[in-house]
Amino acid sequence: MFKKFFCFIILLVFSNCNKIIDNTEDKSLRKYAKNSNILIGTAIESIQLEDIKFAETLKREFNYITPENSMKWGFIHSKRYEFDFDRADKIVDFALKNNMKVRGHTLIWHIENPEWLLKLENDTSVNFENILAYHIKTVVKHYKGKVYAWDVINEALEYNRYKETFWYKNIGEDYIEKALKWTHKEDPNAKLFINDNMIEEINPKSDFLYELVNNLLSKNVPLDGIGFQFHLKLNNSLDMESVEKNIKRFLELGLEINFTEVDIETEGELTEEKLEKQATIYKKLMILVKKYDKVTAFTTWGLSDKYSWIVREYDNKNPGLIFDEEFNPKLAYYKIKEILQLP
Ligand code: XIL
Image (cartoon, rainbow, N blue to C red; front, top):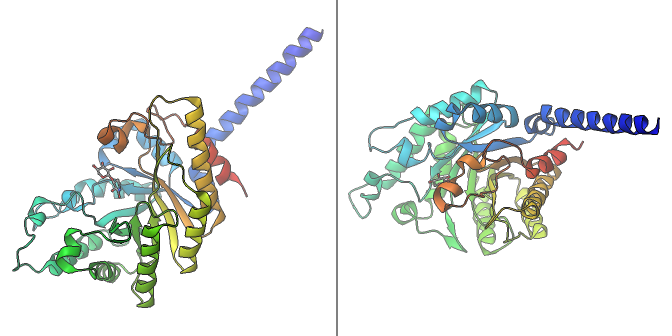
């Protein structure tokens, strides 16, 4: 009798466990994010859409997409007088068809620029402002009404000063202000962002950015927000208090913040302990997104470890995204969902 009762209890618990799992999987990040007015995003390449598991997971879990590379100059404007929108169009079409928003990335970056552009450096007969304005005008016009937010400027700073990029050298520091104005003129409804790395905490770089955007805003330059990239390594832990203070000061300027490129790279063999540590960091980041209304988006730089740039470029098999190579959710997935679910 006791044995039967014991078995019954075990069965009951077990069947409930299954229910809990089913239930959780049924309720995607995307559904909870929508309830909390949060954009939950990831960076993708158009070719990945051909992977059925990838496309299914993307549709189910995310409501925000960043083209990982296909809007960068080297891909979209690889010939001087021609634009190639094919790959980026595929991504934008997929997003709109599936009710997702698009984060345009990026109109200006110092990397992945075409040969033809770099060759013009030092040519005094060239009007660099015209070239940049033409690029911005053409790309932004093509995606007018389709791209929700643009990373107009990407990684323009170096420690506590401007990075000496192609545009900085050829136009001067005003290239930032000009680019924002040209973008706004072409699509007044798109949200405009300055995106950068290592500006998450209060430090000389974020101080410099703070002064820069304060100055832009005082001149009424169109700017809606700052993208904090959050490319992290498990061992270099962030000072979350400093991150929160930093978030607050940018929000107080009336700006929005997006977490734009989150990944948490892990060195060496992947252990349970490392996965837990990684999940805790993801959770802490999501707590900040949830806490501040104007921290509006949380984007991971890649959907699954299968396609991460860290695997491709740094030959590290543990790039620390929230889905593994088989598209199984990792502990980090459940931790961020736990926070998204809160009322
Ligand atoms: C990376 C892509 O993921 C790679 O595939 C590409 O080879 C190089 O660029 N910061 C950024 C992103 O703003 O655009 C970068 O993306 C990663 C670092």
